[in-house]
Amino acid sequence: MKKAILATKVGMTQIFNDEGVLVPVTVLSAGPCVVTQIKTVENDGYSAVQVGYMDKKDRIINKDKSGKKEIVHRHGVNKPLKGHFDKAGVSSKRFVREFKLDNAEEYSLAQEIKADIFAAGDKIDATAVSKGKGFQGTIKRLGQHRGPMAHGSKFHRHQGSNGACSSPSRVYKGKGMPGQMGNKRITVQNLEIVRVDAENNLLLVKGAVPGPKKALVTIKETAKTIG
Image 1 (cartoon, one colour):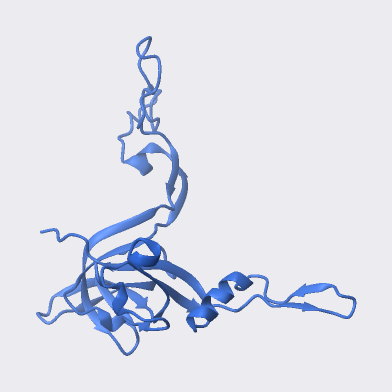
Image 2 (cartoon, helix red, strand yellow):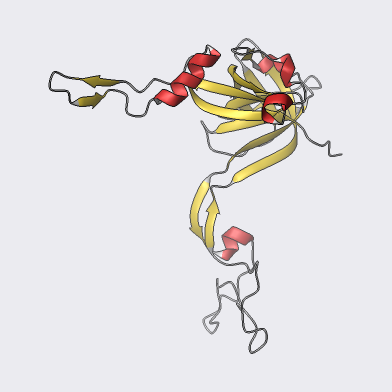
């Protein structure tokens, strides 16, 4: 894997490709990211590049005459992180992620990574946190079938029998039950980039990408080609 970038999900739309076929696409605002640290086999035991994405204010603490501290930017970057960014020579960033790259030595500190590292036709893997749907039953969560809806039925939307009788006298691991749905880290592999808008740092990816609008999406060169 040689190419990777952080992006923000803008939303979905549809475009016509060169053959005149209507294609549903997800618009991603990719980068620009900056390199904040380079890890090498000699120093860290592996080769990787750490990148930062989206500017963020620093946490500033003022003191009045009485010596009382006043935090101006409570949700800003703290001093250790600010020192890390200053060492790399970049402004404070909101998101910091690390990519294991075989060619990490080809990058330099404060180098910008933009959407133009990808081209139309490239295959990518997109990772994001899916939409949270709260506590759901097994029909919606796992696609199980319901029971008869007649008045005499005592089984409608229940998940079914939980376990056997005297043997093994327990519920098997993996039994489908109601619970939290969504809000999980999802990776969709082998997506195709339909178009790249280098001027506006936009990537148009064929199909759906996990996560809600404004979600942070990690884009990597695909690990395996399917089909």
